[in-house]
Length: 182
Image 1 (spheres, one colour):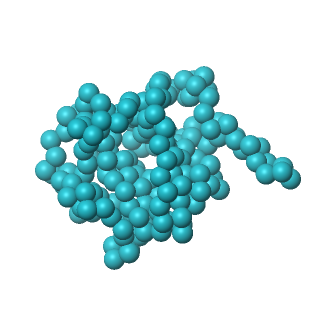
Image 2 (cartoon, helix red, strand yellow; image 1 turned 90 degrees about the vertical axis):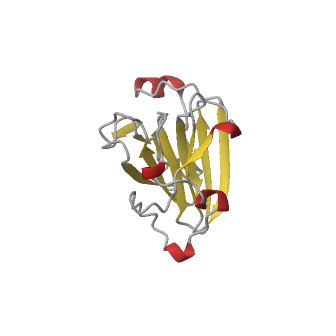
């Protein structure tokens, strides 16, 4: 497994080894020991999956403390642009974001520690997105940031007029209005 550090401390891109032959491929999608060796000391307790079509943008979501979550995300079908925003007070990269394309072709995974907002846009006709969380979901701790915040200026790689966004995600506060508890 190849570990790629990003400019934001704690965000990691993981490229698992893929074994291909005439039958198809095999990839180890999670091995606790290998991830511990890579510095990922998260005990995952919940797996989630979503299916979306081109233009869907989900996010920017997080769980408030004490229910914050670290996530290990990947795209098993199609292509997505995955985005994480640093919400950790005192971090030198507070308020900055990083994006990576995840796809069924590249098999990349993205590790997002606690203290980040997370979202993704669907770049293919359809995408199946899966992720592991190190804490259970608590609806009362649901939080979010406005994914179209001009101060963040995230390039979702989807024209604004083609974005499909939930009503809930359209009502999140801007970064400047957010008092981070992280």
